[in-house]
Image (cartoon, rainbow, N blue to C red; front, top):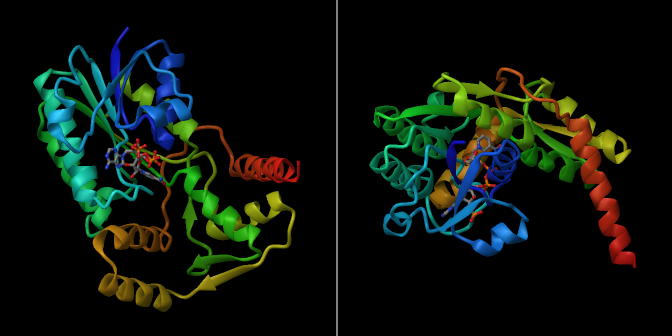
Length: 293
Ligand SMILES: NC(=O)c1ccc[n+]([C@@H]2O[C@H](COP(=O)([O-])OP(=O)(O)OC[C@H]3O[C@@H](n4cnc5c(N)ncnc54)[C@H](OP(=O)(O)O)[C@@H]3O)[C@@H](O)[C@H]2O)c1
């Protein structure tokens, strides 16, 4: 069976990919910076390579005997003081150098839907610069371009819990977010798929209004939605660009941009948002009961 190196195993998507690989009997080596986090998240692997992917010396030979590399490494909520260029670009370049040195058979990289058209955004600029280098590397590759993850839809749920959801525009923009478990299946299938680029979203295409309503329905409370006009979004972006550092501005820039456009990708998977929001509600209830005890 092929031996796979997964970089990003301690993250949301990487955790699901690792599980999917193990369930499919691959030999899995995880490249992680924190052994504690891997343990905490109860992620089982065949082998562990501990290293800081941002520091090339520390990941030397991580790809020895590896057939396939999968990387989901990128900044989402991390607060390490690093930029997208340091992580989404340079850290993945460090891994690509190791993959080339050890002549791995394929490198699978998770970018973002429409990244190639949104290179004006800091996050996409860094990711797509890496994509260009991967394409030129001489290795077989697959670039997975997913839509937003269910983990990000938690924001809708959290706003609904406070009684009101704020949406950019008139709420009619469409999207099909995808659950990590579904996306992990596709990433593992990509090992034996000849496609070099795959765009993917979840099975339901929904407007932002419909997503908000699903969150209110799961909470069983009346839906209250406020639509923020476009001029206000542009003003917030301009002010944020003036006053915030790149590492803080980047996620805001990405969020305020993709939430003001249609983001629809070919549909894949089975998990629904109704089921996701209902699970969030159930875990809230369990936490409440625990705090009462
Ligand atoms: N969330 C979305 O809606 C979405 C949509 C499309 C594409 N994507 C992309 O998909 C990828 C995976 O997303 P995710 O939600 O699974 O992200 P995540 O949970 O934050 O996982 C990201 C992984 O990158 C690692 N990482 C980040 N900064 C690092 C650093 N300075 N040094 C070493 N490792 C570092 C993290 O390691 P630690 O666990 O040690 O922090 C983690 O393993 C990301 O590149 C993201 O941009 C996300």
